[in-house]
Length: 296
Ligand SMILES: [Zn+2]
Image (tube, rainbow, N blue to C red; front, side):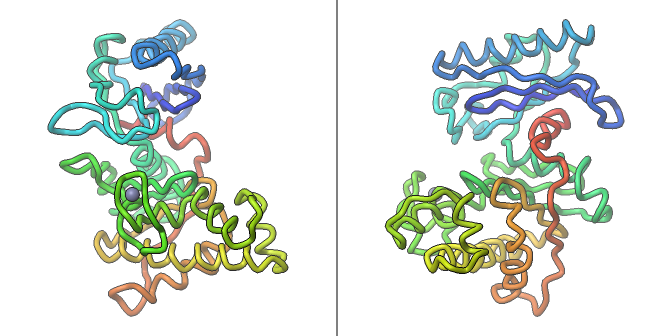
């Protein structure tokens, strides 16, 4: 049995998978992050205890997926948007609290490995060796999987394409630099761009249908810009990594026009006369994060 925990800012989800990847138990509790670091650790331990009680099973190992990453030289979590977790040895503290070995990985890496081993890749591209998983939503996460294993990198930042330089028009990023992919392609960045053009605040849920209706020039400009810069940004990744497959996850990853309008433009920025990389839709939905954690 494989035990996985998906630690988010508002909820903690746990799953137990059997040898074939079937769900044996799945449940969630609130993170209660306002309680602070030690409280979050105790919430995860409580969830594991509930899973033990419900199934009569005991974990031999626990996989944890969460935003951020363990910094390899220091062993401390960094880059989490649940900022109270940053600077703590979360995996070691969980091992102490729960009494089993813990492996922690970035949530985008969990998404990528879950889709590679249990999701769309085995169904649609079973021969793929290198997979780049993208989460396009409130951020622009990414994870690299090679031969079924996450490539986390020596600094724990493998796959973090969201903070590659893309264009000066992106402006300042919270990471301290200018021009990051995330400040153009992530949902909040696009909503800001639209509001500046139109003088009206709308969410992407409203902007996308207005783009399709074709009667809102600001929506047209916002989505055209999205498709142009998505093609440019992902081409930069492909030029370096040359993955067999890119899986497009997250709330913005399911916009159909990404496949029809943006992917055909990737070749314009590629060091190759044609694009052989396959772009796949994820098939695990919200389950990818917690399944990926179990696969750690
Ligand atoms: Zn940045």
